[in-house]
Length: 321
Image 1 (cartoon, one colour):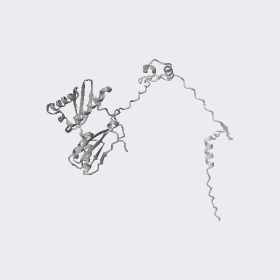
Image 2 (cartoon, helix red, strand yellow; image 1 turned 45 degrees about the vertical axis):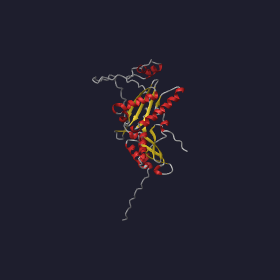
Image 3 (tube, one colour; image 1 turned 60 degrees about the vertical axis):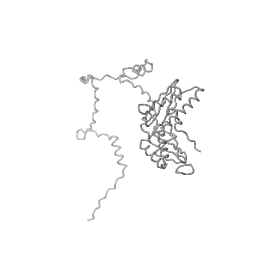
Image 4 (spheres, helix red, strand yellow; image 1 turned 90 degrees about the vertical axis):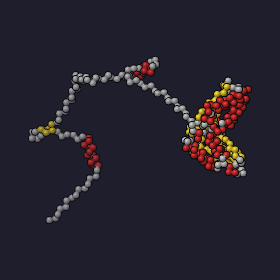
């Protein structure tokens, strides 16, 4: 059998916060917990038509703060705030403490899983076909901007004698991903042939996570090499910094652009005299230059030419007279 995990409890303390924010010693914990449960049940019944999605409670030593997340704040407030005042008086009688009621409006009720489940349950109570009710709710939620939604219905569907489970899904609902923001809601539809349980999962994206801290940028050496590195960093000069500064020579100052280059006074080195060409005497008494020696490159060229195969010469054929 599969083990089903509540999506809100699975992410509690990691990405999702508690709905009841209070602390009590061991002896006071049990009565305060039962009081919280009674208050939530009373508010869900009293504000059934107000589109109540979530109730948050926060306790102090002498006061109780209740935050109501609703899609129809006008119904909760009433004309001139009369409904809120009556509700506050009833809560003070039950708890015996000063109660403060805060109302927060849900701008997109199609993305609240509890309201989606209640919408499907209301359609089932009006004897609308469950497949049609599920499909319409899926389309509305996806149009509102959800990345995925899943609706599950369990009970005697369509007048059948046995209870069965039907479900449908649009998009993706990653239940095993902790950073996925998945809202879960469930309710019951009271029909003439029994109760039908409705569950809804709405995936609206991932929880915003903090960007990892960037590493500290390395301290660059100042452009002016004449300033010691330790002084530029703001620390006391160390022997290593002085050694590095001594090893790196300071750049020579550049000449002004308007200045004219000074003439070179140093004498250029004397050029070596060229060797006199060898002269030989000719037989007629004249002089002619000696033959030049073959260079290595010329000898290499001759060797390369000698390696190539020579084409045979064509012999001229003598005609007989």
